[in-house]
Image 1 (tube, helix red, strand yellow):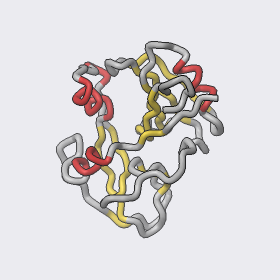
Image 2 (tube, one colour):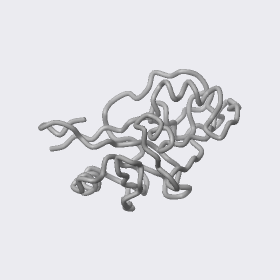
Image 3 (spheres, one colour):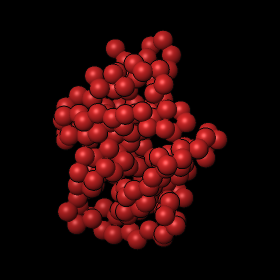
Image 4 (tube, helix red, strand yellow):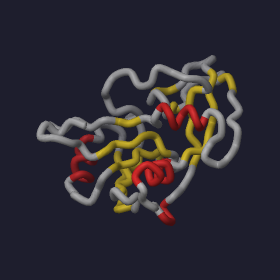
Length: 164
């Protein structure tokens, strides 16, 4: 069985976003009074009383800068919640935020969208297996249905064991 890994926003990127986000704005940290915000730094929901910030993030633009590609018109930025300061990152290996309908968007190595699929709450592994059955799919973005917000990235599994 293939194991899929949810990739949070990378630590060096988080460090930059906490100073100036991808829209050029300085984040405004707040104390989360209610909890429940999906944090893209540690892939869990915030707890009441935690310091968080809503920042603009452009995942395909950042990937393009790393890989020397150009996502063209597919470059988009959107709001994501992160801890206002450093955090420990994800705990555990289970795919997070699977308790609601999600959209799994497929992308090529160049950052071009190749399709998407609405996934019901529950296991995402069958939909990820379907996505990666297409050899041109390099990564999948898991996104919220309601607002289209980026939650995390799943990359093509590597190696004979299928683990990434």
